[in-house]
Length: 131
Image 1 (tube, helix red, strand yellow):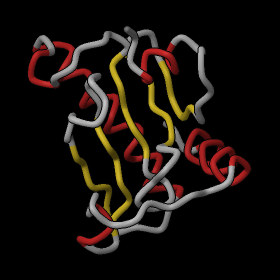
Image 2 (cartoon, one colour; image 1 turned 45 degrees about the vertical axis):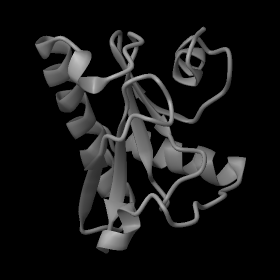
Image 3 (cartoon, rainbow, N blue to C red; image 1 turned 180 degrees about the horizontal axis):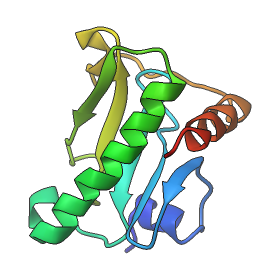
């Protein structure tokens, strides 16, 4: 059975996509910790990040860096935090979270519920800052 991320990759369900190439995709988390919280996902469906081959793992991090730099230009923050938890969806993904405090990346705190309009505007803003 396909993961929810594979369904996004295949355009079976909608997402606010920030960046995409032939191997990776990045989109906004629909229940973010903070505004700009994004996910970066390889298009191959591998559950555990350390089961990726070395080339894909390295390239995933380079792709994530490009997205993180665009988020930094789009959201007021000190830096972008990175988290790989990997238990909530059985498909490798990296969380990129704008940080102003350590608590901004605390996954046990309540999530935000932005509107579709707010998500679309944020995705457009981040996409415009990709270099």
